[in-house]
Length: 316
Image (cartoon, rainbow, N blue to C red; front, side, top):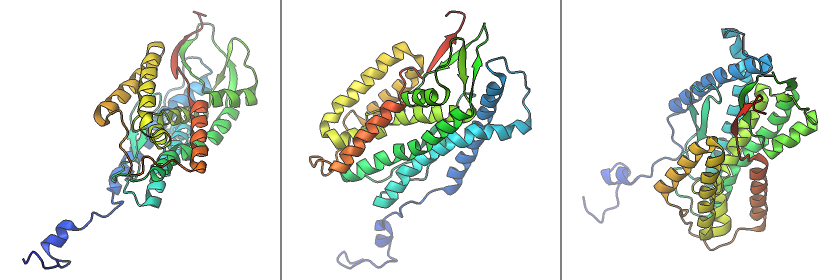
């Protein structure tokens, strides 16, 4: 072929240089993972429903297939929050024509959560700070908008119950927003009693925790994208401070160990500095700076220093 001849649409050179179509996904894989996540979270939801009905006593009701319906209380709540979070990122990517996958859900057959969350894969570099900011913040806002009404609905369906004299188990750390909503609905819980959470409330609690973890201003997390667009290269100091803080929190609460290891692995793989955009020195506009403050407020409202801690009433 003449090197100066323009390739035809059917020539090997043209086929080799054709851009890959955007937003092409293996739909079957996303559907399969979602269906599996519905299954694992529904089974976890059954456990939460039986615990809710038992009022902190040992669960005596045997598992029956008819109970799966009640497992959807938790399943629909947590998958709704996680799904809207990831769809927020995905829709922002579609708006800016940044190639991204549909959400991948992570089903895990554990009794507490039934899932490790969800994520999307962004397959294009994000060229500008405004695009990076909008894509990064769209997920937490979308998930938070679903989590807040789910929290109030779930807490209104919960009830206060007396703790057994020999009760031992686990205590869930309450984010500030959870405490405010609980106080508004139930007031002050007397000593010897505790709020027995409906499965919807537990799903909302987990959704708040997931929102806070994603908003940690470090590395490739949503909070890391937001902090980079606001602080530029100086965000590396915030990233290192967050990793150090997570290590300290792991000393006081073992529930932080896994997240700390994941953060360290992320920094090892991608480095502590955020990949630069072409307009790194251009400041964000006022509206986006206000939204950055909103993201910080969401992080404060959803964060808890000890998500899960052993609880022993006898020792108290």
